[in-house]
Image (cartoon, rainbow, N blue to C red; front, side, top):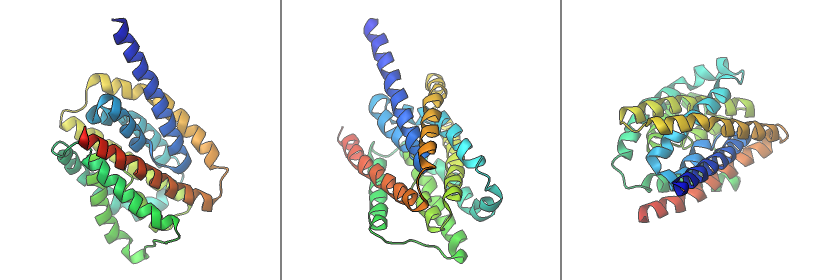
Amino acid sequence: MSELVAADLGLVLVSVVVFLCAGFIKGLVGFGLPTIGLGLMTVFVGVEKAMVLILWPAFLTNFWQGLLGGHLKVLVPRLWPFLVSAVLMLGAGTLILTRLPEGAADLLLGALMIAYALPMLAGAVLTLAESRIVPVGIVVGLVNGVLAGLTGSYTVPGVMYLQAMGLPRDQLIQAMGLLFLLSTLALGASLGGFGLVGGREALASLALVVPALSGVWAGQHLRRRVSEAVFRKLVLAAILMLGLYLVPLGLWRLGA
């Protein structure tokens, strides 16, 4: 009995540290909480339970980021085709998740992140003409929805698309928050539809909001001290590091 209690306390401590760190990264660059939280917690509780654990922290941090930035009137008219496409396809990704070998989605997502971040850090510039924002956004949204359902991460290729639009820092942060908020709601509905949301994990997810929001607050405090140029490099560096983290994780899970 004492060993069981110790194991539960150890898992609680690990969960708090994971979501505190994941929240800090999100506060600093605007994303990363689901990817980091899911990737690390999968090691301890498995991918399906880990996807449930991220729901409440992701929802509330993204609610904060997506709705309270002051740019909704500018962003929604430009982004709604992209956002709707991303939400509509997320259920398809969750369905595929139930059929793919564990780790395959992480490997794919990590490779895409690395392939994008390396040339951009080397000086490549990805831009979109205004006339192409809607058609490209629909395609990117469809792909983003599938990958979000597969991996629980809403980053690729949605963040790349938003960066290519050339949004100022505060608008970019809020646009990412809108994408992540809607994707979190769709993921929760999709997981529930497939019977993957358990009561115990849902309560644990709600409790993990506290360390997640604390991390976001600390990350935001640091972000306000960096310039626009440094911020964009931080975003690319974060994408690269997440990719370098996901590729070996995917390989490990495929071989487990």
